[in-house]
Amino acid sequence: GAVVSQHPSWVICKSGTSVKIECRSLDFQATTMFWYRQFPKQSLMLMATSNEGSKATYEQGVEKDKFLINHASLTLSTLTVTSAHPEDSSFYICSASFQTGVTGELFFGEGSRLTVL
Amino acid sequence: GQSLEQPSEVTAVEGAIVQINCTYQTSGFYGLSWYQQHDGGAPTFLSYNALDGLEETGRFSSFLSRSDSYGYLLLQELQMKDSASYFCAVHSGGYQKVTFGTGTKLQVIP
Image 1 (tube, one colour):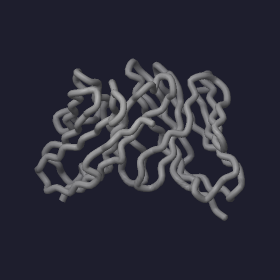
Image 2 (cartoon, rainbow over the protein chains, first blue to last red):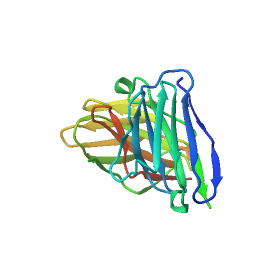
Image 3 (cartoon, rainbow over the protein chains, first blue to last red):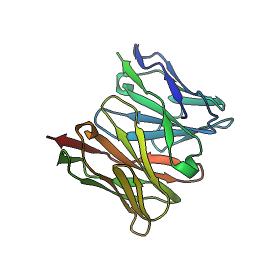
């Protein structure tokens, strides 16, 4: 089956620093990747839709300059949290679309738990 | 924008049947999917409905009524391992973005 790898799984950083999270589709080409954020005991909130070779489409209320998304190839998308603050601490999870229009299935990475001190 | 509503919590007995409802509002609707998520883990795909009707996959079934903007997930022969959060998600828009519902925490008791 389609595998999506996300790295790092855990990251702790100091307030004011930037953190990069990578999302890779290992055995398929993902034209579209989605980035979600999830607070404890809450739903997955869609942050942005990332398409290879074009600018990401951000959801309303998500700061583009704070959450930089790059989709440089069909197998890699990155999310950079710039100037992180404690309120950015959350579970960030990516997903990749492969024949999702037919099967409806999104393939998720393992998620990255960010803690900002 | 999109909005999806689910019951926040459901408790059911092992071996029983439980139905989790989802109502949604969206434009450019393509389909409704369901995901299971255990604490600390990634969501796992369960089913997808693009057309009205019932889709069955083992112990899980999912139903969609496009005219009513409503769907449900039916879990049969509940097992303890089914205790998890369940999310409905709408597929919409040109890139078929997937927006998740509020989630239902299912607790299966002996």
